[in-house]
Length: 472
Ligand code: NAP
Image (cartoon, rainbow, N blue to C red; front, side):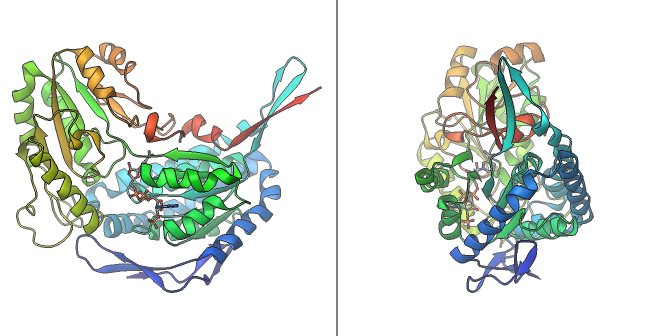
């Protein structure tokens, strides 16, 4: 078991003012795997003050030196990659065969990638008699979720460092250890004191304090739409910039001329990976009526071949939900789907075969789903796929866009060209055509209630930049 008894403020590991410690449970075994100390409002004040004091020197540090720090941090993270991987398996429940690929190596590479963007801060644009310059936003507060914890953390920390911001970060209570390992890596990289500060505690207590703090200039939040709204409300009286990366209910349109086997393998895998706890999961699969029954059979066979089990078993593809409470939420949605009259093709509310403990849910597929049903409108955040039939592409686009969310989407067609024509009609921040890969250099973020920010790439960096015009 890992025990952390200090938080990281002003370049030092310090005892927090908060009382007691947060016990982190392994969702596969129900055992405590880590203890993390609670901070309180005083710790937030101390951390914010440290970030404020460090801001002037850090923001005026030449961009090539900031780049060097980012490369050093990536190197120190790499040295700790096995440790990061273990925490993902133990705290989130992602199977060991997927942990590095989906949770660790990407963010380490992306951290180093932001080193190359530091020099953007030196660029000056001239418009007639004006000089347009870039400056860092200032002191940032980062609040993160548990589903891709390191990735979400680096998606904020690395561009903020590149832009010249200082920060206070908080990880989700369910998956905190990676943040302590990251602080250790940052400390080893020798980042100046106060630039990065780590606190820990409940979102409702210290999270809200971070958002309302008058010395915080910007909040970047990734999590549920519900918490995102509270964060924006807490930040509003001090008129901070608020970047929100929220939930989704993304649609995947498969056209009549697509290779059905390949398309469905891609779609089912996308929903089931990370046990369905992916904000961009393509949870509404839209299939032409002419191929609907054929598609359902392929999806059923594919899902039933996925091994559900102990995340430390290298054969497992689907681990437990991240917590028992998340399991209960997902099971209640499965019950709701049955109650609403959707056809249960595979899965359901029983424990997967061979398992008697742990927060497991069977990979579940519903057919005959109407887009107005709750299981088609609300984010379930579990391994549950809704298959929705459509008559023609216009109807498919209408169904895809009929959601309060707009985070991601996908199209699978005979060729990429025809898929892109449909992709352009979808109201979502991203679209994956014919199984396109995730790209850390491309903007990532949502439309509508999926949020208002962009992470990764140049757009992710721009979130942390103020633009100033100087008239000459
Ligand atoms: P969550 O319950 O909203 O929690 C996210 C973070 O916010 C946690 O650190 C939580 O702290 C904190 N928090 C909760 N209430 C707060 C409040 N009132 N004030 C300040 N902080 C507060 O979300 P989650 O269950 O961890 O994550 C799942 C959600 O994140 C899903 O909806 C998913 O779609 C979304 N997500 C979106 C993206 C994206 O990029 N768009 C990426 C990943 C996940 P505690 O843990 O201490 O409660």
